[in-house]
Image (cartoon, rainbow, N blue to C red; front, top):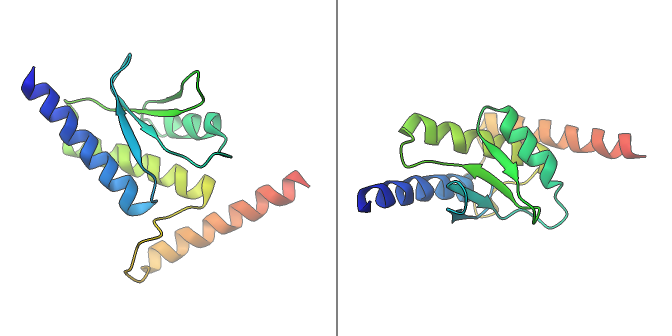
Amino acid sequence: MKATQAALEAVFADVRGGLMETVGVDCVLSIEDKSSVVLDLPAETDTEQIARAIDLENVEAWRDDNGRVHVGISPWLSTKDVDQTVLCAVKVIHVLLGIHAADNAAPPTFGQKILSTVADIMNIQKKVEKQ
């Protein structure tokens, strides 16, 4: 039991670190019905849209009764699975919310600039469609 708990905490730490480093979103570990990380998203976030988009990326995600987004994790995830979980959540958060880690002191890479530009364009399109 201790080994399983330690493995789950290690997976959580990796997911949390990846989210904080890339999009500046924190999360907490939840072991209510299933083990998951609960994303700490901005208050105005459409959590249903975020949960669906992450789930469509083949990473289990859902919205609970309180409107919080859960991303499923397991102590048996491989390093590759953990990376995929972080990548999918980061991609969805960055593209749909346009946020990134504010404390990133390193200059953006070319790929990061392109991703940021695509996110900006998508945000402009969403604003135009709403009008």
